[in-house]
Every structure is written in structure tokens, then in C-alpha cells.
Length: 261
Ligand SMILES: NC(=O)c1ccc[n+]([C@@H]2O[C@H](COP(=O)([O-])OP(=O)(O)OC[C@H]3O[C@@H](n4cnc5c(N)ncnc54)[C@H](O)[C@@H]3O)[C@@H](O)[C@H]2O)c1
Image (tube, rainbow, N blue to C red; front, side, top):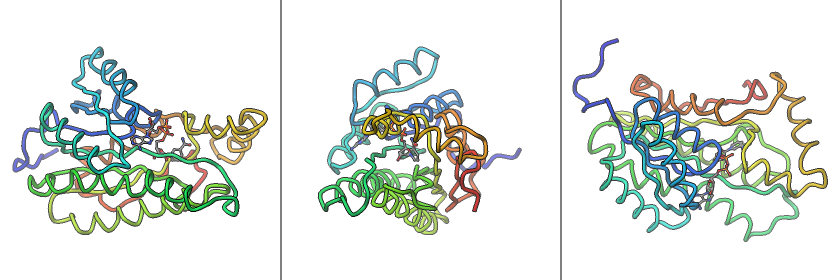
């Protein structure tokens, strides 16, 4: 394969993974590190971020943990500055922060709406804004925003989250258009139900700990099981790769066939 010689050294690009202490984010960080990226593991949960980064270093990778609260612009900017000072300019951004609780829409209030939208949508905007300018100045970048199939096809009891994730998809397509001639791609990965803390926390609010939820989801999924983070990480890795440079504005579901259109 012929590589573009106009771009800088490709051997160790710098990747920032937000939500990097979580199930999907930490697996994405490990995947990227195994595939030659230096990774910054950013999360509200700084101790777990540090542990994820230490695990990557123990396997021979280059990694740092950093505290970041995506609901605070100053926190996002401080974390980006810390990463760039330690590792170098951020060339790959993976936004894997997400949060939700299951409620019938009619039982929700504005405080809950704002919380969901701030974490899942505005937080993603803050992170895109904080790194995309540098990427365009350098003429190279990969942004992967993690949305959800809820944002494509809806999900009962997740109305506000579905709307926020639909917003992530629509925004990403627009940013992809705006940055297309500047060497920066923007794509979206939509996990289906995935075995992480987020799903487990839904279960904790149910009398059976969420067993029925997982078994009914598994029955609905053509492959007969919910995802694990290792199913999702390679899709993120593909969009983050040098080789995916002609792919932008795309949305890829990783759902065992649950969503196909
Ligand atoms: N697990 C699923 O079934 C599922 C399905 C579809 C989409 N997703 C999406 O995948 C992504 C990863 O979710 P996950 O399942 O790994 O969940 P997770 O709960 O394991 O990880 C989410 C991480 O985000 C961090 N976080 C939360 N609020 C934050 C904030 N304000 N600032 C910084 N970090 C914050 C948490 O500390 C946590 O480490 C999310 O965008 C989620 O919406 C998950």
C-alpha cells in the first residue's frame, strides 16, 4: 500500500480517548495502543484512567491517564493541554463518554434532560472543538464519536439519550463535511447493547438485577448475545486508522445484527 508521504511520522500517533476508564473506552485505548498509538486515557474517574494507562504501559505501550470532566469546558481544555505537553499533538480523538438512566419519557424532568444532553452531546462538542482546530492546522486527524443505536432507531425508556446520540450522529456528519478538505475525518460508531458498567447500572434499578433485560436483548439480537467491548473496539480502531482516510461522515453499528438499515 502506498502511503501519503506528506503526512508526519505515522509510527506513533497520539490518541485521546474520553471515557477511557469505561468499558468501551478502555478497550478502545488498549486496541489503539496495541496498534501503535500513544494513548491518553481521559475520564472523570482519574484513578481508573491511571490504572488503564498503567496496564497499557505494562504491556509495552505508551500511555498516560488524565482527569477530564466533559461537562466543564475548562476541564476539557486543561486535559488536552496536559496530554499535548506530555505526549504531543493529538491526532486521534475517540469520544467514548456516555451516561444514561432508563425512565419513561413522561416521568423525566428538565434537570434530567440537561444532564443527559450535557454529558452525551455538549460534552462531545467540547472535546471535538478542543482538538479539531489543531488537527486542521496540521492537516491530519481522525475523530471517532461513539453514539448508540438508540440514536439511529430509538430505544424505549431512553428518549432523551436517544435524541442526544442522534445529535452526535448528525453533528458528526456536518463536521465531517466541514473538515473534509483539511485532512480530518469524522465518523461514528454506534454500539448496540454492550456488557459494560453502563448496562449493569441499568440493571441495578430492576428487581432481578437486569437479567430479564439482558436475556430479552440477547433474544432480539440475531447473533444471540449482547456485545462485549472487544467487539466494538476494532470498529473504532478502523475509523481511527491511517488507512481509513477516505472514509468520513459514516455511522457504523456494532450490534450483532440488531440494527441493519
Ligand atoms: N454499554 C452499552 O450498552 C452502550 C450501548 C450504546 C452506546 N454506548 C455508548 O458507548 C460509550 C461508552 O459507554 P460504556 O458502555 O463503555 O459505559 P461506561 O459507563 O463503562 O463508560 C463511560 C465512561 O464515561 C465516563 N464519564 C461519565 N461522565 C463523564 C464526564 N462528565 N466526563 C468524563 N468522563 C465521564 C465514566 O466515568 C465512564 O468511565 C458511551 O458513549 C455510551 O453512551 C454504550
